[in-house]
Length: 397
Length: 124
Image 1 (cartoon, rainbow over the protein chains, first blue to last red):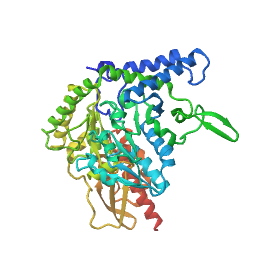
Image 2 (tube, rainbow over the protein chains, first blue to last red):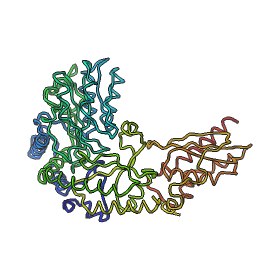
Image 3 (cartoon, each protein chain N blue to C red):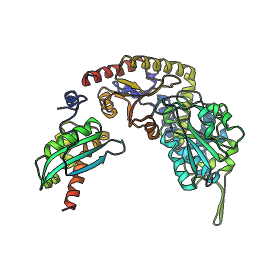
Image 4 (tube, rainbow over the protein chains, first blue to last red):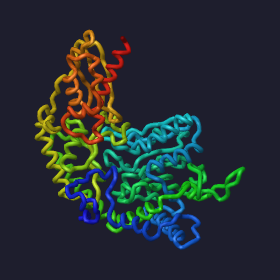
């Protein structure tokens, strides 16, 4: 139904794109908005004393308000980054490095993408922190009740994904604050896989930091958004220094901006910000109710049809699944299966999906992963299962 | 033969030379890039001649096929002959093209064989 909005499908008629957790395709309105910025309005932001400069500034700050609205934050709590990974690294460096000292503890879940795992592992090594691991159940599902025993008086942060990039299950992040109680523990959320599928509300989640990328939600690559709760800003030190983030610079010192702009040193990706805001409007126009209804229908059908094939083992659970399904074909290496799918025009992913601790926990080396976008339809699912039948025939499964 | 032909021929079974050698003189373990796959190669050498090769471990079909085809080419030849094998030659005798993401699967066994050559030379 939405495929017509995406030129990639016009230009690749045979494509069945089921790799949306890696990146989503871009609707025409997003590409047009970026093209329009470069062809009509291009100038750098900050202090352009001429019409175009003022326009660029307005686009840039209006977009910040759009992103704030998208996650129910204040405009001043939004920082533009390169991607989710940069946002999480920013938190580890700019907040973690100044707030955590030797012996302090950071809780990290074992279902994290490496982007919310490695920054904390690095910081822990550097500052001699103790990492405590929040383990999922044997299906890879995190339970908030398992978190409570990990929290101590030395806990400084809890780092967790909102939705697993491998299993597609939603974590009850909104219940974590209750476990934290009045302790001063920062809740750091990776929302990369959540933003295209479910409404994200930082007030409801009561988190301190939340990072996501626009390219997974039908926006351009190269732009991420980091939410920093207002009262955490004063606890942070600059991450990158340079243009546009200081009020005065002299040979003996510098005075930095007190706002979140302090984390946006250098020329930002303005066209991407413009395109990203258009992606938000595109999603809002369709609405999460319609998106969820459509995607849930497809998820239900996939799980139902998987049951026909005894040689397919699903690693994901269908409950709370937003449309990311990990599975394997028993006896067939995921890379070989992915190549056979690719020969049939089906784009999906094989490997550890940058979540090696989770794969180790589940006792597997690699898996196949299909992930849905709002444009996927029943025909795509039929084509996927045609390929499954071919693979069954090839291997005599 | 194409990739699919090979898959249909061997299905989930073992490929020629797949399996640990009971008697070997050298063992080389090699991992492939960042995907986590890894094979162990067993060589039986008499004098300068490679009399037998076997391999086992966890790997995709392309990796195992490349190991199998390479072993077939090398058994009975001298260690010195290994120098004649390069990436271009391995991709050619595979007989079908692979995309760049999977080239590392095909080329990993060659690396193991080159390591074997270097280690044999170093001990002499």
